[in-house]
Image 1 (cartoon, rainbow over the protein chains, first blue to last red):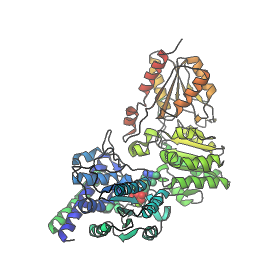
Image 2: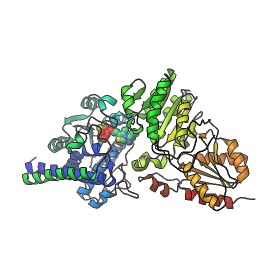
Image 3: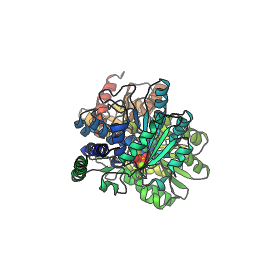
Image 4: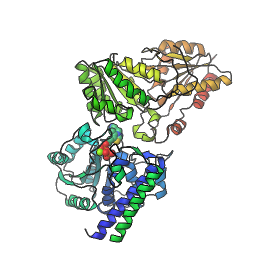
Length: 282
Length: 321
Ligand SMILES: Cc1ncc(C[n+]2csc(CCOP(=O)(O)OP(=O)(O)O)c2C)c(N)n1
Ligand SMILES: [Mg+2]
């Protein structure tokens, strides 16, 4: 990838972070850590890898995104707003009465959200069904599934992974957000999951382990998943919970936290400064 | 039972009470054991739980496994209390509670926090309006929906030693002060919180406060409502309900739950079999939850004092006197 494209993706990721923070700040608090950690992946998915049409969000041949860790809704809404699925101003309706942007992603409320999630684990099986369904219908499209590392405590996640491999769902790409933390603290203290890459490989996936907060690494890894074949793909994203906002990265318990006016102003100013820097670079 | 209700809220929130009471129960009873599914910080037990990993079993986000483990601990002689949010404490683990728990006679207590609209900003996926219905179908299950902090403490304390499946649904925020501190409650024994002769209102959980406010409003119009706290939705105190309805001739059920399968249905059964009378419900219509502040959601789903007062007048008007 050339410098220009790399800079453009970094800019998109920063814009998604600003948008996600705009949504969360508007209601005062929310799932900041888990939203920020997937913004780079969302930037590369929407900016490069996924076949989508914001004007036609229900297009059957589109690539689909299932954010099984549905509490990262604000990041997904940020990406959708940046892509033009709905007006940017809508972001500040997060969690308000009658909103189209609930805390957890909902396919019946938000244009561009492909599956309803929030009960952790469930999105994994549904994504398998979507990928299998598209294949059986002969549609040339793929399903991208974002799963949390804490979420992977759920047995259902592993039932889905076994199924995906058994059915040779090479049109399914699992992006596992290995950000080392869940709600009560560190994954290694709560329920150590060991070596995700080795586990996914043993389950029959074509597995890559990358820095998931690096757009270039993401782009290369996603390019590899275009290969077809007879295995589902897994990308273990070695991520930082709260990535992109140093103060959140350094907050140990950063799952669901308040965002004050002052923090919002400071964090978004930092992100805007980064955007300006990359714009110069591009 | 001394009622101290004056409309004021208890300054102590349920989260703070749970966070101190659970460690206390562990200190008092060596067989008491607490399990959680990555939600210790949500009920204030994280710090203690981390320091006492043999008394507080962190199961991770694996609720079905947690219930199975709790059942195994019960078989090994422990008195488990397993906590997660209401939808995961009911729908998500129903078969494990039913079979490994009730059917196999492994006695456990399940604490499901943030029932119904108290799930507020967590939204529809986290908003159980059906958990009572599910637990009602489990033989031996006891369903508690505490109406104040005194009751929550007493219920949590006694449930560890009760046989069968005990399900406690409660929010993590505030509740009004209703009962004198130290009050003791009995399974299957309702409490008449306010006496009246014109209409029976049975209200559980957060709806008791609404029912008492409604009774105040009705009193201004000369209507004397009798307000009953069922304490346990299952088993339901038939005698108290029948005696009240024989006096008032009508009934309103108020619940933070789908109108199907919960308190209202349980009460209708009692009326139909014992003392047919006009009845109505202030409950969630057959709908899913949605996101928003609790106050908004109570309006949205009609779970307010005004709706109770209106329904009371309606059922009174259809009495055959
Ligand atoms: C079945 C289920 N159990 C519990 C929860 C509550 N919950 C929401 S997010 C979360 C932690 C998720 O951790 P992880 O998957 O690592 O997400 P991330 O770190 O990316 O935020 C928990 C326990 C839930 N939403 N669903
Ligand atoms: Mg995580």
